[in-house]
Image (tube, rainbow, N blue to C red; front, side, top):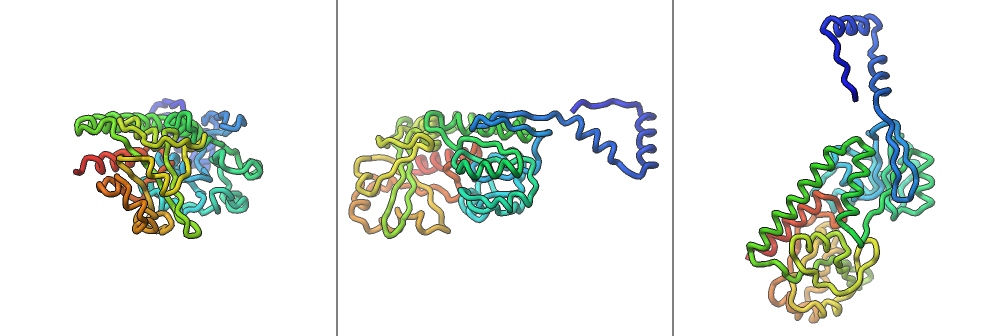
Length: 326
């Protein structure tokens, strides 16, 4: 916003004039007029037009919510607030946003009641839901993940959200801090003689008494981060084109051989802890080389595996600490 310089006398006269009118509305109007409109193209190819930087923002997915908070924008509406508070404690909510429903099925009434300036959604949201949301407010749709360039997708999403909210300087700082963390941690692992260590990250869950395990391949965000700090991804299985995730079972873990194995679970979700729960007495699991050698690492709860730069920095710190603590 262009600053207007006035003499002390002129400033005094202006103040007296406003006082006499008994209102400061003209000044507020002047501020509004100087806010430049913003036009963006989102991941769907749609043009998003804003009168100025968005202040009242709704996030329909946790990764965009984390980006908003990191950028200093407290979202007024968040999908599954309870879930976010459980799974992303690295970048906690600083306000009490309205819960707008499920991440894949937001409540249109709840969103509309907030009169937002902007709704940030992801490509995971059904097209019909996005169409309905566009009737409420401008929608900035981003691609949640991209296996071809996971880190590039994360930072591109951060950048476009920053442009929409007038926080580009903060975005640059976040990216610089993330790059510094990658460099610092790679050096720490090199110094510890751990460069090139075969590393396998997964999460798991139990449904209908069946254990499912999700390998995070090189196309996953965490997989890409692991390689940036000098670790070798031990998974040979192919992941999906967006998140770089695959599916296996406990027998599939026998193909890993000797590796460092890490996972993240959540104490409030018992279905997310099969490695210390359902598999604890499984003969296949207990005979795996990395289990018998004690090379299984449960990283701290609250690091969102699909989050932004701050979650990734917390993840890097956790991995370095786990591998160098011996």
